[in-house]
Amino acid sequence: MVIPARNAAQTLARAIASALAQTVRPLEIIVVDDASSDATEAVARDAGGALLHMIRLPERQGAAAARNHAIRAAQGEFIAFLDADDTWEPVKTERQMALIAAHPAMTFCSCRARHVGQDGRLLGPIHGGVPVATGAEAWRALLAQNFIATPCVLARRTAVLEVGGFDPALPVAEDQDLWIRLALAGEVGFVDEVLVTVQDRPGSLSLEYAAQGAEVTLAMVLGHIERQAAHLTRAERRRALGARYGWAGRRLYRGGQRRKGMRCLLRAIVNGHEVAANLWYLVTAAPGMSWVKRRFAIGV
Image 1 (spheres, rainbow, N blue to C red):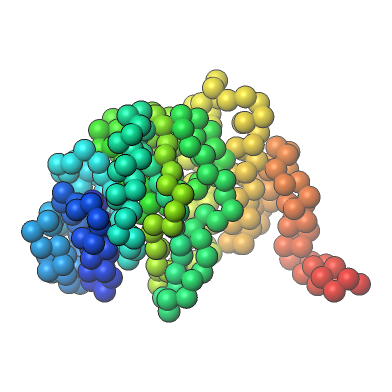
Image 2 (cartoon, rainbow, N blue to C red):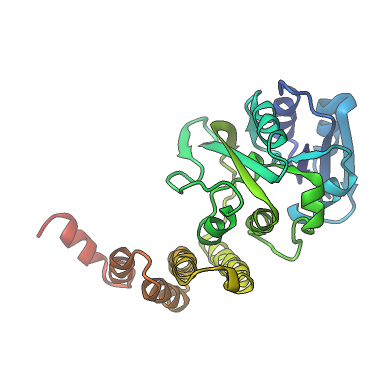
């Protein structure tokens, strides 16, 4: 069980408590303190008890590197990822262990998650509405859309190590990158139950940073599409490119990078992805064109 933590003293005990409450008791709880300046380490030691394996990083390295430290140090056959402000349902590990143990070719499995606000209000499902793919060909679907949240994943440790773990060079989307690589290496499983609660994080990303993240994510996925080109049909390639360009285009546009956003949205349209919706977005999102949306909304 792997928990990267940075200045997580307020929420870490809750996350660890949900790990300890599993119906299948964890072998160890590895908390990687990513150079926190608060009481993260003390909270972890108090909450984790005898099962805690504490790793303290002297300098901040980021969540990807922190998880990699834990993966290398882990003793168990399976790795489960949990973030310091999220929680698991008690049967999460049990359900997933039963699934992955029954399928030797499965490199990892996931489940559904809910998103809850800081006030406890339910905000909806994580990746709601995105189709879930399983089996040996799930990587094809992951090229187009991500449907996996990090705290939902339980993976074979050997498989994670064999594909190289998380890429610490990626400031965002390092999780999506790993899921694609794991899916290319074997089968993907899914427990169709809500077994994870993702807490709303204070200080959410600004639009500017979200736009930068869209560029990083898009470049990462385009690299995977290019490397797998020989194994993709023309329709699969167009679907993946269209969906990713459309996703990135809207985030870039909202982040103020309108030219980049427009180019991405036009590429999504060229690839046949939600042509009418993307054209409508371009028209109504353009500066000075909000009146178009208002006019049509009232039926004038």
